[in-house]
Amino acid sequence: MTGALEAEEQKLKQFQMHQPAGTFVCDSNIYASVPAQELVTTYNARMAKDPSAARRHYDHIVSRAPFGRCPFCGQRDVHSLDHTLPKDAFGTLAIAPANLVPCCSRCNQLMGNQWGADLESKFFDPYSESCESFDWLRCEIVPGAPAQITFVVDCPAATHAVTVNRIQRQFRLLRLASLYAAETAALVGSTRALLARLFVRSGSAGVREQLLETAGSFALIRRNSWQRAYYYAAGNNDWFCGGGFDT
Ligand SMILES: [Zn+2]
Image 1 (spheres, rainbow, N blue to C red):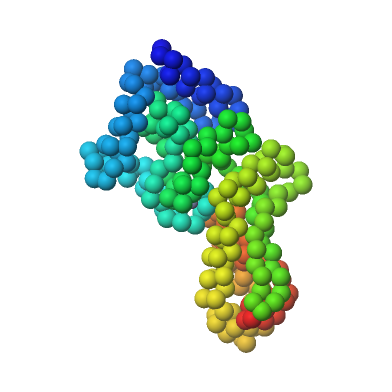
Image 2: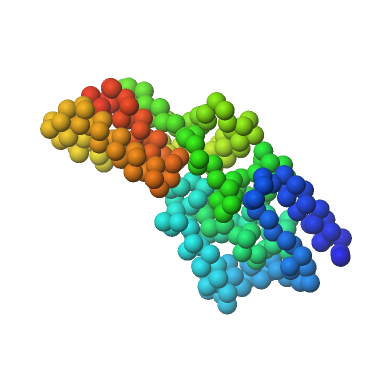
């Protein structure tokens, strides 16, 4: 084993030591007979490059993202593959399918070459790990003209501190608060007339029912989507349901 491969093995062991049970496992030995740099070159020149001989494999993995949406932000289209363990540090995993996660170009760029040497600095692996078993994304609506709509991480009190820190870190690094606020502003603008008609027909109770039913629909797709958080907050906000949507 070369010195470089040995160093990579050690980093991989360090990464896996901090992995939650049942999550990402990738054995670098499967490609150990091929020099790491050759695998990186294969990825860059023959797989990621468009067009190239193996580009279809890249596109196939990209196409596996549910609804074509990035699993990290839940919003943007998927156009790239992220290496869970960066190819610059883990060359032997450059083309390993288990190490390739479809995501949007912006999240890929913001995650950079970070690979989570300890659990707290590790991004959630969409393949094998989920933080969707409880609500952690909360939308806040402050009355005004226009209303101030913001998003914060708000985990249940019993959530393990490490999980809370990981969610907060990922939320901050991927700049999701500003992304979700911008998307919500556009949504509020485009649904204003619809809610106004509903208000004339059914009053604030009708508006509330519509908003909460829509929140429930989005929760079925992605529990901590900005849409679920917004519709839930709006449906439970007396000012918003009573005409605040039209400010
Ligand atoms: Zn994304």
